[in-house]
Image 1: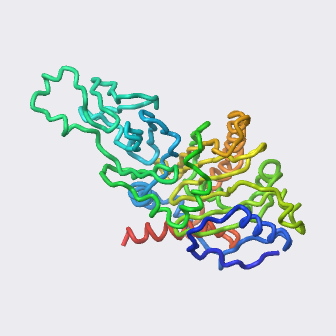
Image 2: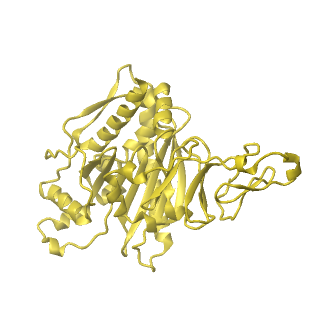
Image 3: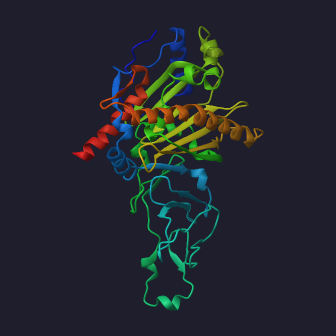
Length: 402
């Protein structure tokens, strides 16, 4: 049984939804027999979107080379001298927390002879090149040159680190993968998705663990696995499907971004029960930040939330994908909950994603590369989030090609 809900129109509210707002919708779907949010019609997608090298290069240029990308959370570089290396989108980028508390981003490149400055993200007061020991402060200024007499006439002010566009807002740090002085307006970029992400209190989320997966599949094929619950019963029979209702999900569009809410089987007990008797649950859900990032909030046993981040990037060929999977401990977690509980939950997710979702992605990618000319995949009305992402990508890539 399904119901038609026109949920693919952009949301315009600035106020974030409460978890109770979302729970009411989930329980209504369950009370109706297991319905789900739907788009207006099915949608076909050409296999070439996953296999065409020219398409891949356009995506790298227009999406990953020009748009703001979620590089890390604020607590990943919490203190002055903390730094993160961000290499996945193309150029090697270094994100640094300055003495003034401001986050900055630079090409991870010495201004002497372009050597890579930082390999390991250790706390430090100076950024010292391993090649010739030129040293830079946390604001990117050149402060030390061994044997400086050999560089007489060189103005240090012209040898600062090369800046990269960066912006910080709501506990998130975004960069653009090219050189530039721009300060990214993150709040404007997120639009109505911004208040939803603020409800997760990402500014207080402390990093616990990160993994990197490389998959022989197009980045969009892997990304498609995160946005629908239709596959839970078939693919995740003994994993996610044991605790989550298959093909019962919420979908909300926020311009280029979206949120999906998966329905835990525990919500079946709420059907017919007064809301006053429902337990309180922290705000959560799966938030897609265009073009490639999932920010997921989920309740933890004992109280509070875990924050999972899954960021996908294209590889060198259409059939390659890189994924960074990380987990953060939310600020609302009781102090007696051990960090290991978050690491264990993260390891479980990584295992399921790599052995189930990405296994299908890899095999499907091979089939697409050998499919007959003109073959198209179809996204059903119950895969509305995937439809929205592909339309958004087509709109940007198509406009750039004109």
